[in-house]
Image (cartoon, rainbow, N blue to C red; front, top):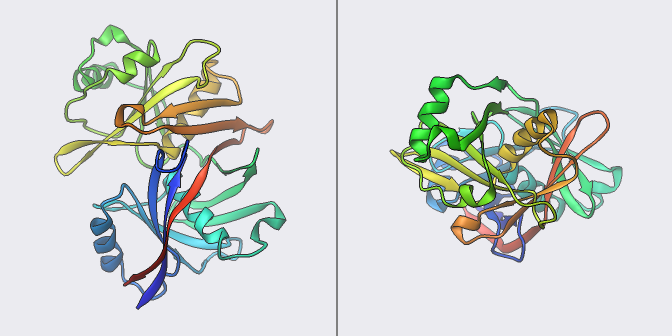
Length: 276
């Protein structure tokens, strides 16, 4: 069956500088095994499949797959999927927000300063990291323990542990070994720089370490930590993907009620159909 399909660049500087996501805009009737097979074939960090919502409060439902497994939530696929869906749903943003249904629950999206943004989901694990774990992370990152300024669990689904190094250059120099779990590393740029932080995201996959070009879920959870600790004030911009030759930019904002909004520029690069 021919199905509408798009590849979308999320958190792009110019086109082809962010993190791509493949979107199947009508996955009605597709079995889970077929979705996983297609996600494995695209070999992108995530491939998404749009379905009618089961929750009456949602505009659409999405399933998100890496080449290896299904995820309950992920940030850049959420933005890319909503961007693709809006191209087929005339006037959908006129009410101000879009509600996405996914296994992690309902996620709100809106236009913020001309960019599509999602509301950061609740954290499922948040707090200090045991010293033994910090030591292990230092070993995996191949840095001295003293180079880690702070560490915090910042898990909003994928399992992130957040690490802060002394500056952005220290982050860019990292050449990690095999990571044990999803690890996000941030380092500040000097005051007055275009971006406040350089961020890198590492996760284990198939017996190796993979680096994600630009990561919405990680930046949402890091923002909560940075605001709580006083390390950042809203709004701020994150640079990510530099070490991979990308130019990802993540725009972070926060409302008075504490809601964190994660947005970026999104560009549709490929449109057509796919046989599934």
